[in-house]
Image (cartoon, rainbow, N blue to C red; front, side, top):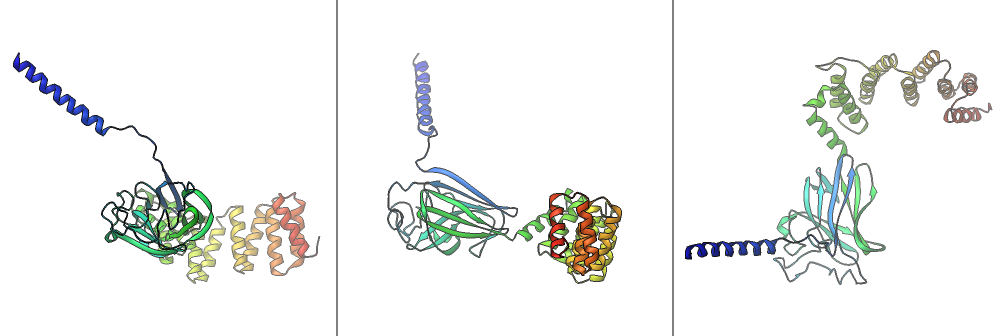
Length: 366
C-alpha cells in the first residue's frame, strides 16, 4: 500500500505542476490598448506594407512631451539612446517586396523596423533597422541600421489615432506618411518598376511563361513603351514572331517590331513592316495605325490606310471621320468636308459625331 500511495502521490504532484504551468502560459486573447493595423500600397507590381499599433492623443501634448525630441534613454532595455518607435507596442515594421529607394537611398527587399528620431518640431530622421522583433525601441542598436534619411515634418489637421497613409501615389513611387496629433512625417518610396517587371519576365520566361507567344509580345511592348532595352525588346518580339515552338506573324507582333525599329532609328524598315501589319489589321487596328502614321507626319501612308478602311467598311461612320481628319491635316479641305459630312450622314455614335462636327466647324463648313 505504501508504494501504491507513493506512486499516485508523485503522479498527483506531477499533474498539479503541469496544470500550474499550463495556467501560467495559456492566456485568452484580449484587445491591446493601441489597436494593431496594417496599411499597404502597390507601386507597379511591388508592394509597401506597414504594420503598426495605433495610440490615441487623448488630450496629451505629443511632440516634445509624450514623444520627446532626440534620442533618449527610456529607462528599460539595453538602449541608452533610443528613437521613437513610430507607434505603440511591438516594433512598427515596413516591408518592401522588391528592392526600392527610400528618400532616394537604396534599400533591399525585406522587412525592417521603422523608427523616427524626432529632432524638433520640423525635422526628423527616418531609421530603418534590421531589428524587427523587439518591443518598441527599448533594445534599439544603431549597428542594426539599414537606412537613415533626414526628412521634414509637416503640419496636418488633427488626427486623434496615429495613422500611416499613402495620399500621393505615382506610377513609380508613393509617399507614406505617419500622421498623429497635428504633425505628419512623410517619406517617399520608389520602385524601378520597368526593371522589376522585365526582370520578372526574364526569370519566368525560362519556364511555362516562355511557351506562349503573347507573353513575348507583351514583354517587348512593355519594354518599348517604358524605357527598356530596345535590343532586348527586339529579340523578344523576334521570338514571338518565329519562336522555337511556334511561328506566327500577327498584326500585333509585326506592328510592335516596326515600332521598336522606328525607335531605334530604322525608319525604312519601320514603314515596310507597318505596311505588312496593315495587311493583317482589322478595322480598328487599321484606324489606329493610320493615326500613328498621321502623328508621325507620314500622311501618305496614313491616307492609304484610311482609304483602305473606307473601302473595306463602306457603312461605318468612323472610317469616314478618320479619313476626313487626315485630309484636313494634309490641307485638302474639299475631301475633308466630303468625308466628314459622309460620316454624319451615317448616324454616327456621339463621340464620332462630335469629332466630325468639331472638324467641320474648324473648316468653316457646318
